[in-house]
Image 1 (spheres, one colour):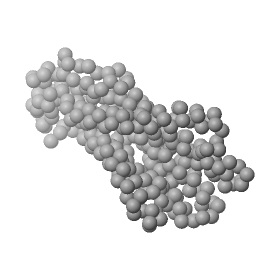
Image 2 (cartoon, one colour):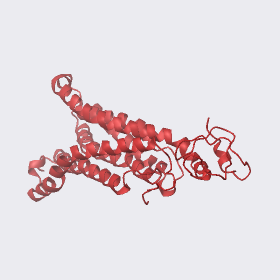
Image 3 (tube, one colour):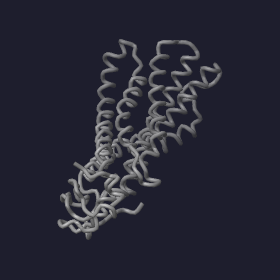
Length: 297
């Protein structure tokens, strides 16, 4: 049984804790102790544990979200390999659009983590809930783009082809935005748990992974929209090989090659960051006196 959170804000009215309530630093049961005293096990003021009571309620759901995101990243990479193999030998005969299936699969896999990671917590500007709208909009866009490519794949009309190529161009961009946005709450809570990885490291992994995904996606969008331009005017060049050579070289040097080389290592680094965050969220919520090493916001 946990202490009533509302009672935590009226410590001056209730002199002692009358329910089972664990110290946020060491887990010692503080029942029967005065709210103005300290934990007999580690010396942490009981007032600090009471102040952390809202986070004690919030933490299990967020920890589940971190686990769901780590599982989603692993499943997405594994699913990408398996589906590509399946597409090559089976889906091609069934005439099912592999790009559309991947987009729907990505959106569905990330959705549970998005909900659990954006549960509200009062952390000021670092409240994970402030990112919920961006994450859900990007996931919805990815889902719609996936289904639109699936539906238009069977049509050979001019409009359907434009929609199909637009989906090919915008789908990977939406997915990159989803990954960057959904890792944001993990960066946010590094100020709220003791002894995590330094915030700058978590943020660097997040931005590098975003660059690894978004760089090739932007280059691919240039190619796809050039094809849209081609089908709208028969005299315009078709495909990436007819793009201006300087633009093609710039995309290769700054978007395609670096992104492709960074994607694997940064994907693995993101899994390591999530594993570390998951581990820290299972430990003490606050550091005991003399053991504090909280990163600066």
